[in-house]
Amino acid sequence: MATSPRLAGSARTVALVLAVLGYRRQLRRRDHWSRPRLMAHQDRALAHLRRHAYAKSPFYRDFHADLTDAPLERLPVLTKQHLMTNFDRLVTRPDVQLADVENYLAALLGNELFHNRYYVSATAGTTGRRGILLWNFAEWVQVVSSYNRAFDWAGSTAGLTHRVKTAVVSSTNPSHQSARVGASIHSRWVPTLRIDSGDDVPSIIDRLNGWQPAMLIGYASMLRLLAEEQLAGRLAIEPQFLFSASEVLTDATRRLAAEAWGRRPFNVYAATETSGIAAECGGHSGMHLFEDLVVTEVVDDENRPVPPGEYGAKVLVTVLFSRTLPLIRYEMSDSLQLAAGSHDCSCGRPYALISGIQGRQQEALTFAAADGQSRTVQPLVFHHVMDSVTSAGWQVKQHGDRLEVLVAQPHNLDQSALAAAVRSALAAQGVQPPLIEVREVDAIPRTALGKAPLIIRE
Ligand SMILES: [Zn+2]
Image 1: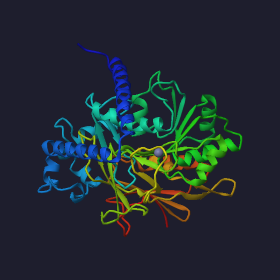
Image 2: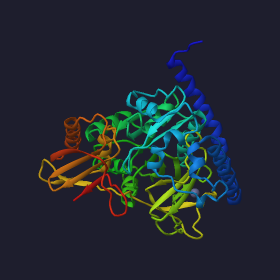
Image 3: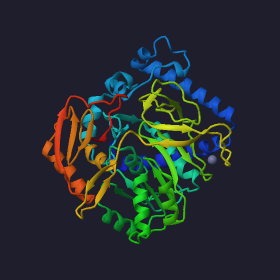
Image 4: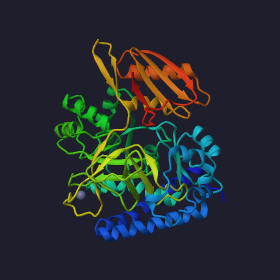
């Protein structure tokens, strides 16, 4: 019997919300586990994941050849390059091929699923080439639940059991996971206003004033900007919950938010590849790692473990619930620090704490504004424009009053349209757009450390 896609979509939303509510009960029970019990759970989940990968993924059978019984820390590191180059052999389902997923993403308009069953997200490409991830329904329940856990820990049952008016100021690009998660549970449970962080500030403020959200979620740089607008009297909202996701939530931003709204923001650490990895509880003594969902190894440039109390160069993540596209020791460029020694949180949760997280290798650029002052433009303004380009990577380089935009191996790039899009994004920030040159290159040049920063100043 044929059902309309719309009806199927709404039935799927109900099924998803119910499954997430059910899974939330399990997640809450784990908050009361002892640490040994949590570690035993992690070991079992890791063994399941590896058995699945070796049975279903030709790539992992080769990649871990002779190491299938070796401990996790002896396994090779999976980079985004590996993932994308070997996608069709790494994936555990024969009906999933990268070329088809790329075509689906290029035509994506809303919340339609790939092959009517897979939720797909593309990464923002913070280390060059964009990554593509996908999940089936059972995996997606865990993705959504991991984000929901952050709200739950903050004491908000918003989003699922109470109608809490929410505003999300982030990316509205449907290929981004945050937009995907929002769209997949958008329903009468979650009256949500989604605002694109690339929009101009007065229009963002108007819409927030009209909506009056009880819960506000945004990138750290956006929370800071909105707190300043609130203090200046142009923004007048009274959110009961503030969440910062993506980017570094600095102490200055925390103080500004507390001053503006009389509440402390809750920090959330998430990435497209892993979904939620860590979140703050009401103790505000750092973010607890979701060790039941993801194994997070803090390592140096040579992939050696970095002890608690010191910053690592990157993290290696193993997503314990990943099945369609298993991620085992996947490299991410975040630099973080685990809490040292007997640093506990009063809440009693068994999960390790992150005591610090540093920015990725990227910079905010400064430009002249129309009034002769200088104005700083945050990286996400460029991310927003560049994420619409299909390529093997990009870099925005400022040389004096010139801006060079490098695009590696682009697919059907219209150079003048891209230059115009960058120019108008800068104009929306109130700066005088510089001379913009778009260049196609074979690869984005790497630094001595092997990084390909997205945004640099020369
Ligand atoms: Zn805690």
